[in-house]
Structures are given as C-alpha cells and as structure tokens.
Image (cartoon, rainbow, N blue to C red; front, top):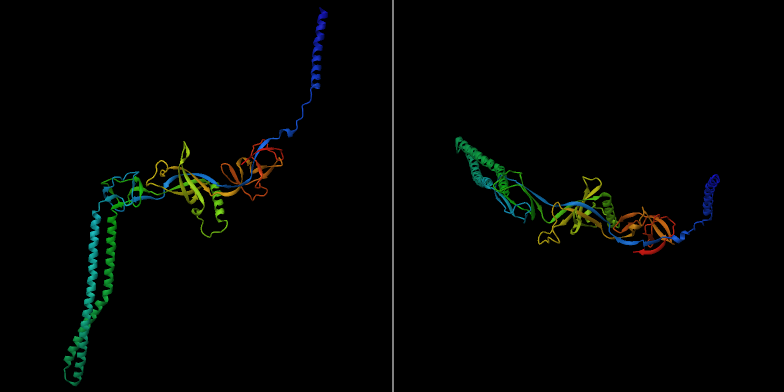
Length: 445
C-alpha cells in the first residue's frame, strides 16, 4: 500500500513536466506566418476628369408674399354713409373706378352753392370797377376840355382887364370857376388812379372765391369713394348708414397685378452669388452709375412651401430681383425683394394659380450658367483633392467657389490646383494617403 502511494506521487510530479515539454515543442515546431506583399492588395478606385462645365450658382431663401401696392382708403369728409357697394366684402375682387361708398353730400352741396354765389358777387365787383374806370375816363376827358375852355376865357378876360374893358370882379369870378374846374379834374384823376388797386383787389377776391369753390367741389367729389385700380378687398371697416369722421380708415385693398416677396438669404451665400454675377457682368467695363441690383443677370423663381410637403414644384412663379437691403431682424441674413406678376383674368387655378398674400414661399435665386473648372463633389476633401497619376495618389489644393448638387466650381487661378484633364479620385478610401498605389477600374463622367 505504501509502494502504491509512492508511485502515485511520482506520476503527479512527472505528468505536468511532460505537458510543459510538449507545449514548448509545439510552439517551436509551428511554422512562421506567411509575409504578404502590399502590392497584392492595391485598392480598386473610380476617377473623374477635372473639366470645364457650365454651372449655375443657386441659393435658397424664404419669405412671404405681399401686394406691391396697398390702398388704404381714409375718409376725407364726414357724414353718413348712404350707399355701400353690395360686393364690398373682404376677399372680393373689384374693377377700377368701381363706386364703393357714398357719403351724404347735402352739406357739401350747400358749401358749393355758397361758394358759387360768392364768386359771382366778386366777379360783379370786378365788372363794376371796370365800368367805373371807363366812365371816369370819359368824365375826365370832358372835364379836361371844359378846364381848357375856362383857361382860355380867363386869359381873354385878363387882357380886356388891362385895356379897361371889363371889371376886376368879372376876372375874379372867371378865376374862381377855373379853380373849381381844376378841383373837379383832380378828383376825377385821383379816382382813376385808384382804379388799378381796386381792380387788383377785386380780381384777387375772384381768385380766392374760385379756390373756395374748387375746394367745395373737391369735398363734394370726395363724398363718392371709387376704387383707383383693379384690387382685392382685404379689410372693410364701414357699414351702411354709419356716420364717419374725417381721417377715419374705411377699408383696405391690395392692387392686383404685381406681388412682392421680401426673402431672407444667408448673407455669405448671397454675397458670393452677387459678387460673381457682378464681376461676370462688369469685368470688361467699369460702370460709373450707382449699383442697380435689378440690372444684374439673376434668375429667380418662387415655390409654394408648406411644412408637410416642403417646396411644391407644381406651384411656382417666375420672379425678378428688384432690390436688396440689410435684414432688420437677422444680422447674418440679406433681405432680397423680388416681384412677380399675378394673372387674375382668365387664370388657371390648377396649373397657374395666383399668388396670394402671406403665402410662405421658398425662393430660388441663381446666376446664369458660366464655364468653371469643376470636379465632382465627392472628390473634395477639406479644400484638397487627390489625383491619380501613374497609379499613385497626389494631393492638390483647391478653392471651392460654389457647389451644385453634383459638382464643385473651383478657382482655376489658385497656385498648384488641379488642371483640366486631371483624373481626380472620387472613391472614398480609408485611409487616403498621398503616394499610395491605386488601381483605376472606372472613370465616371
């Protein structure tokens, strides 16, 4: 029994040693891993040629439609409304020169009649002065002739007095008559000299009465309120038989025809677009006029926008850029005003509906297509591209002017940038290392 235990202890010591020796032999005899050449794993890539493409720079903004011209009807007279057009309601479309309201004209008719009477009296005063002037001229002529005769008679009597043929009293009597006649002629001449000032005053009174009559006529005309242009009624604040006061707001109407949209654009994008269009349009000649954004070669379109469906391309309207201004609400945005014509007569409510006020719109503004050095957007890696030359990748710097849905327009004047015909890498490799070998298997357009 003791010998059995001794043998058992012996194998407990030997077996672990044998296992360790077998493990060491297995590790020593295991073959080394095979070395693979990197050339056997050159990645397959796709490339595209850098070339000139006609690209349009397009930016997107948002704004609400408004009528370009809004008419605020304010009462210029006071009185009771005696007529209201039966269709004068919010949303109604009425033609130009339609009579919308009439205010009781009785008081203004009385003022006009009084003004006409005062004008007639003033005109009669002018006619009377003119008649008196003619009468005074005739009287002055007659009295002047009589004065001359009395002067001759006094001269004759004075001669006879020297010869003793007449008495001194006769001469004095004649001289008294001469003085009286001179006084009469002087009075007539004075009255005649005052005629021009009296006539001017009377004519001024006539002019004043004419102005009062015209004012009365204008007030009478203003008792009838007419629509100046084809318009859509947007607000009505008056009812039939209602008394209105002067300067009271009666209604509001939006003129049909031209709508405007004040759209907000990203400042940097808008500046980039405008600068490129300005340079392309004025690079050959320097204009001396003030800048006019309406003259720039810009293309714009309006698209109906809703939260659920986004921009609905089926509802769109052509537009024209008219002016731009700094946004008062957002310092990093530029406000561009665009205009479009609304077609209300014989309009197609399905394919070409009219633009309505407060409609929220997506505004697309773009330049004309110009040739630019360009590459696909997928080739751009943080202002660099990789070109494939002799099956190796070379890095080149690029400056992106703008991008479209597929391509990036590049600055061809940048030093060391890509050239026309260079094959740029469009496959996304991780990692992408300059100098690594690649295998071109596809060339995309």
